[in-house]
Image: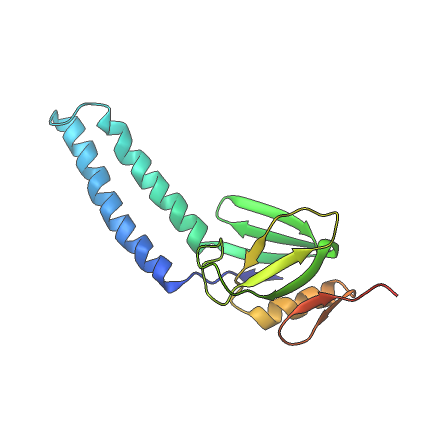
Length: 155
């Protein structure tokens, strides 16, 4: 099952402003270089600005989380990370740093079981409870209490 990531509205606004500025500046660079008003090397800056804006849009707007058997696949634009669900120790609502990779204030933080070293992972699925419930169904060792997902202690 695939769960879409939810971008923060402020990021959408920033992206729109960035796209307008990038298209204007990139177009001006190309026009200036082809008309001789700017040095020819500006001809390469325009397309690079447009590509960088497109990649930023791709990352912000195309985040998803897929539960594929016993693996959680996290996609952010061109990046794809495969995480064994068995390595997840706990997923809980995170508070604090607003500049983390998942920008929304009500994101989820993932903790991993040793020795799996995935670093800090923040998630922001649109359907938070459906996502956590599906993870608990994918791994019987995980239990969902309505707010957080925890690995049961081995008996």
